[in-house]
Image (cartoon, rainbow, N blue to C red):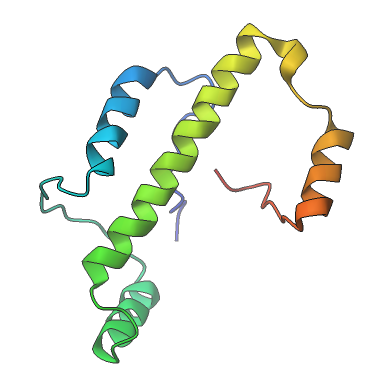
Length: 115
């Protein structure tokens, strides 16, 4: 199976952060309209979601997928904002030692391949 991460060209990609922030703000009220979309999932993931929904662990596959996609988009938006800040003010970027100390203090494990 090919790359299913959904990641695009990387940090050089240009995006209108204000437009992204506006779209995310529209989600904050909890009254955003919905739009049906079609996505391809690896079969085992689709089957696992169906099993969890049918057993009552999840109330809705769509709600679970929406929540996780929203979390992903918000994390990417934050990362893009930080990248822009660090481009403009590289002196604000924490060094690796500081990042390691914060991660250790907060018991955070960061997948280096993650978004």
